[in-house]
Length: 169
Image 1 (spheres, rainbow, N blue to C red):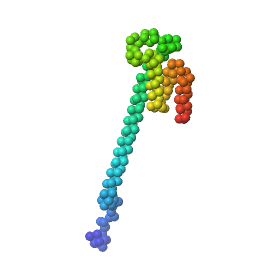
Image 2 (spheres, one colour; image 1 turned 90 degrees about the horizontal axis):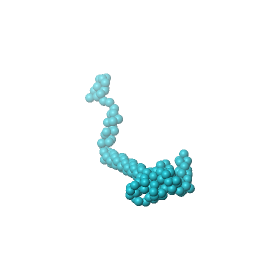
Image 3 (spheres, helix red, strand yellow; image 1 turned 60 degrees about the vertical axis):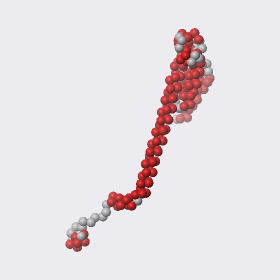
Image 4 (cartoon, helix red, strand yellow; image 1 turned 135 degrees about the vertical axis):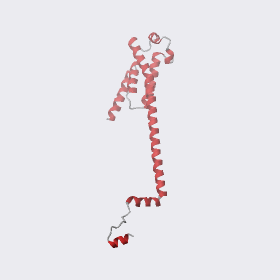
């Protein structure tokens, strides 16, 4: 039909095949390979999203545990600070401790003020190991060490954190 139009000098209706049409014909001929590639890409995407979610969940869990350690240790450190100020430099004054807590020693496991501060130091050490770069645990641990009379160890704790911060810069 287009040959007749061409012979008469009329416009020819036939046009070159569009690129999308060529692509569709090629894809239809290779649909098995394309399906495998698309399924592989989908699997890779889902796997990547799953791993990213797992990593984020672990980070959040460590963060919550860290905050829990800090929250449980801070009252004990502050108790030691109060007792040190009230008791003239000692945190093992049973009389002051009993006045402040009047029968509530079970909250601290009956360890007394010095045992409570030691427990707080242990908890802060766990927090520091959990997320090493955070400043709260080393700072409050140094305060607790200072209260416990371990002044040199407290200074080393602060110096170690300061060195870590300088290395990050």
